Length: 144
Image 1: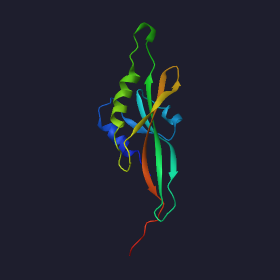
Image 2: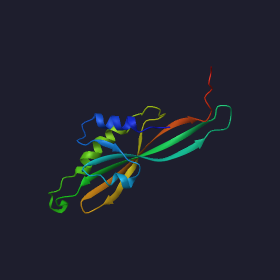
Image 3: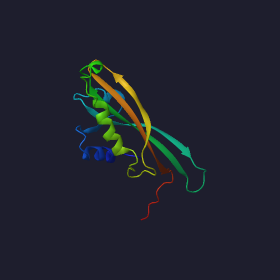
Image 4: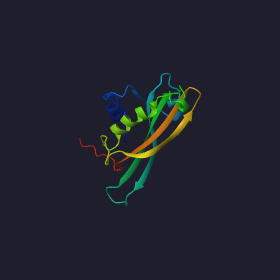
């Protein structure tokens, strides 16, 4: 199974101005105390089964949600607001897209992004990235 620890280490090794963290779901990612915030969440996994034979393999396409939260202030209409969202998303996506995490078969692909939530004090955006890996369902043989 794919782990998000190397993803977290990669993002935190760069100077993004914010520490990335892990969350169990999107509502937990939106309950951060400090903004800006960057949270990784495991998404869905789609499995494609190969033909059954002695070495059955399953291709797993796993999605990871990257939730970016920024404070809302100023007025975009009068040009006093700073686009914190773009300033944070661009380096994060640059660190992830085309990077091949340990255990993955293919580099990370960007599947798009959208507004997750807009509150009176914060804006949360989610980008979805994905990668593929192979999983074998053969039990490991134990040799004495």
